[in-house]
Length: 109
Length: 179
Image 1 (tube, rainbow over the protein chains, first blue to last red):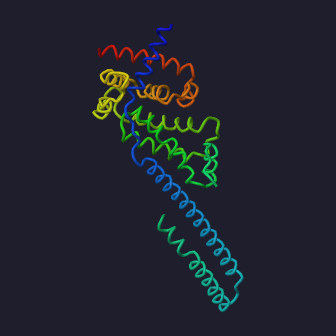
Image 2 (cartoon, each protein chain N blue to C red):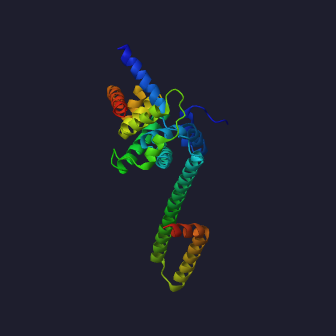
Image 3 (cartoon, rainbow over the protein chains, first blue to last red):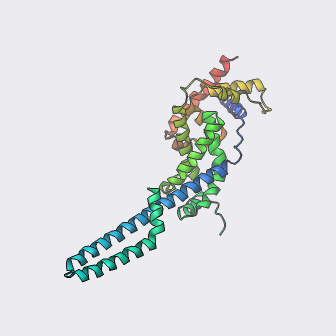
């Protein structure tokens, strides 16, 4: 029993002595953190793009609903032109407000 | 605010958006994770890949770490699984490439045993399957308790003990074969 234990201990010491030299590669921590930062940035970008896409879709849907409602209530050609001018103004304002972000979204699609 | 020393506190900070706090965990465990991967793969390049993938995966799934085990145990488990996957993808077990042999033959700095014995032991270790090499690394080199190893490798404690016993027997046999 004691011999077995002595043998086991000796074997354990030999295993430790035989452990190959494993110097940690230079800059391993830096490379890992660079990957983590990149991953985090991509994740944030993805979230931002999703949020922006959602916002744009909601805005477009709202404009369409307003347009349909207004078109149904128009009863003269002058009124129609005034309404179209108003809608064009809304669309231009929307494009100016989120044009850059929308371009970014389209570029990423 | 200083950097907390407790792993769980650091995890909480990372989860609240402090990505840089993860660097403390990377600094604390990268060497050990690399060591485990190297012990299993005996290849510096692949061990580095495993270390990088392990931390990236840990970061991605950090919210699933509930603290039921120590952070190190959880991290080692990921590293072990990644390294095991690499082992499955690489050459069939038993065929050692030149890089592995080079590791086994590299200069011996141990003072207690003669260099020839150490190199023989390295070759004997290389003949073990990667799973057993992981056990050897965790038990003998990293000196983890059997219970922790069992959790990392998803085995029962009894199974770990039996496997360690068999590994010792096999190593003795391999050492004698080469005499």
